[in-house]
Structure formats: C-alpha cells, structure tokens
Amino acid sequence: MNAIIMYTFQLLNIKHGNTVLCCHVLFDLFEAVIEDSFLHQGKRKKLTALLRQKGISDSGVLNAIGSIPRHCFMDSAFSENAYEDKAFSIAEGQTISQPYTVAFQSQLLRIRRGEKVLEIGTGSGYQSAVLCFMGASVYSIERHRKLHDSAKVLLHKLNLKAHLIYGDGTLGLNKIAPFDKIVVTAGAPIVPDVLVKQLKIGGLLVIPVGNSKEQRMLQITRLGENETATIAYDGFAFVPLIGEHGWK
Ligand code: SAH
Image (cartoon, rainbow, N blue to C red):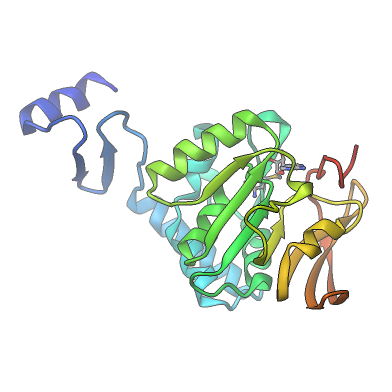
C-alpha cells in the first residue's frame, strides 16, 4: 500500500478491516485493489451497447457485464483495453474470453436466480463473476493452481461467492451434481458424456467442440435419461480443454 493512502487512512482514523468508499475508488484496507473509475464505468456502458448490437438481448447478461469490473480480472497493463470486445492473455498461457463470447455462452445458459451452475475453466474468474452476478450458485473448476488461487482471492474481494475447485473439470463434480446448467469455457474435442450425465433432466450444457483452431458452440438440452437435443453455432476459438475427457 503506498504512503499517501496510508497517510489518508491515518487522517481518517480508519481501523484495520474497515472498507472505505472514497469518491469513485473503493479501497480494501489490506491492499488498494479494486479501483473502478467513471472512465471504466463509461467504457462498460459502451461495451454493453455493442453487445446488444451484436445480438445479446438477455437483460440479466447485459446488466452483469455492465456491472462487473473486467479490468480487475486481467493484467493492469491491459487495463485501458479491458472493455474492448477482445480476449486477452492471462497467466499460464490462458486467456480471459472475449466479452461477446462470455455474453453468448451466458445467454445460451438461460440463467435463472438460484440455479446450480458448473463452469469448467475458471481462468481469470470473469465468467464465474458474471454468473454469480446473475444470481446463479456457481461451482467452477480450474486445472491450473495459480489461476485457481488468484480467481479465488479476486472473487472474494469483489464479494462474489462462487465455489472454486482445483482439478480436472472434464470429470465434472459428481458430489454436487446434478446441475441445472453446465458451461465449458475451453475447446473440447468431444462432448464428455460424464458432463451430460451430471445435468438434471431439462438441464443445459453449453460447450465449444471442434479442433484446436475452431469450435462450434453447442447448446445441449438433456431431455431424458439417454436423450438430448443439440443446437450448434459456428465461429468460436478457445484455448484447449485438457484432461481425462478432453485433449491429452
Ligand atoms: N472462463 C474463463 C476463460 C478461461 S480460458 C474466464 O472467464 O477467464 C479456459 C480455462 O480452462 C483456462 O484457464 C484453462 O486452464 C482451463 N482448463 C482447460 N482444461 C481444463 C480442465 N480439464 N479442467 C479445468 N480447467 C481447464
């Protein structure tokens, strides 16, 4: 924490553990972390207008993307570009998905408040944050320890209560299943049957499936014990889903 902030806290007689709203900047007293300026807010508004133009109509999705500070989920070097409709690199050679992709997947999930949702590929934690904001009870699995750990810290700071799990998401999460919805945010070679089996009847699985360069987004409805219906959308490119039922 820098000296000016320390001095300000001293003048205000703020105690350890308090949270202070100071103009447009929210400081956590352990670290000055969450800074959300009017500029960021304005850029978010423009981003949601762009997503609407691109066909996103779910007001819950637009509201979440208009509220979650995406710049906090990426390297501060990209902070000024955080509200461009682009994917950016995060640690471990992974990416934070393009806002349109996050919005598209979230819209296909048709989230209703209180639904139990499993995400595979926590990455930065941004998609988890969007789903939490929409009122879902979110479980999210990540195979890189470092990404899992940093997403956990960040979501806690933002007061978003997702359950983050470290492990191979291609196995799903049997002990918490069945889920209302499952979303996979990495490109899969096939639809892992184990994930379909962890859906409630009537539940939805949204998963990009294809080769390493391009995938089709599948929206799979579990109609019965062994019956599904699938709708496919072209033109997505994700980092690979690696694991027992993914790429090796
Ligand atoms: N939803 C993320 C997108 C991250 S990119 C976001 O909003 O930022 C996809 C993520 O899937 C990467 O972090 C990658 O490490 C993770 N991943 C790939 N295979 C996985 C697996 N089998 N289990 C869990 N996570 C996996």
